[in-house]
Amino acid sequence: MVKAIMNGCNGAMGRVITDIVSKDEAIEIIAGVDMNTEKRASYPVFGTLEECPKADVVIDFSSAKATDGVLRYCEKTKTPVVLCTTGLSDAQLSAVKELGASVAVLRSANMSVGINLLFKVLKQIAPVLADAGFDIEILEKHHNQKVDAPSGTALALADAINESMDNCYHYKFDRSTERVKRDKKEIGIQSVRGGTIVGEHDIIFAGQDEVITLQHTAYSKAIFAKGAVEGAKFLAGKPAGMYDMSDVIG
Image (cartoon, rainbow, N blue to C red; front, side):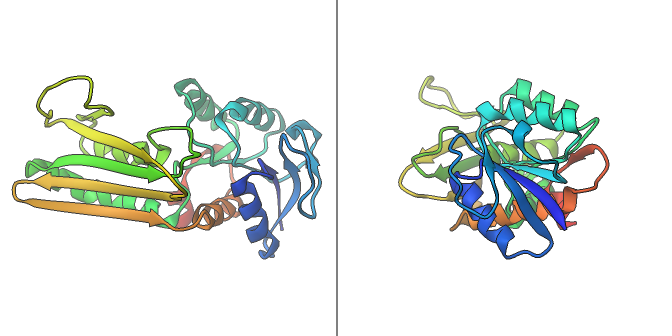
């Protein structure tokens, strides 16, 4: 059985993951970490990772400001880590890649199976539509408590498109600061925040007299939590390196 530490265990996603793991005989959470050390499940909760017993993998669903500590802990203890936290800085992303040289790291901007299949589809169709003159726009919507914008998933979708076309596009996040026509080599990325929207991403290919839209809608945080649990089971025991959900789903 895989033994896991749940970092951010008392947060919304931590509680969902805890519930999923409690029904999975292949994995067990042996300790949790949270600023709020209230015990809400069968495992003990600590204020820091350093207080936890040794585990096979860390599942991190906390906040970007806690990521540096997670990386230091995993480097020191050589513990594989599933990084689900979004909104990381460029410096933090570089540190994650450095960690991957000595520790197994699984990081995906979005842990759902559907989104990761969408990444693959976009890499196939984006070059065809771009060559046909289609403009590319991404619209993402999330709940009013989400602090980072655009979402990590929106950026990952844009990256998947851009990588399929030799990274010849640039990203446009705001059209209100200048009055110019749209650049054909830009991917527009816009954000909406409101209510309790779990997550919605529209990828719009707008051509001459026709529009193709690919949409993914998350109705529950459970889809991300399930992906994180599957990722943790996959990562435990793996050699050092960078992994993502495409490795998990095959």
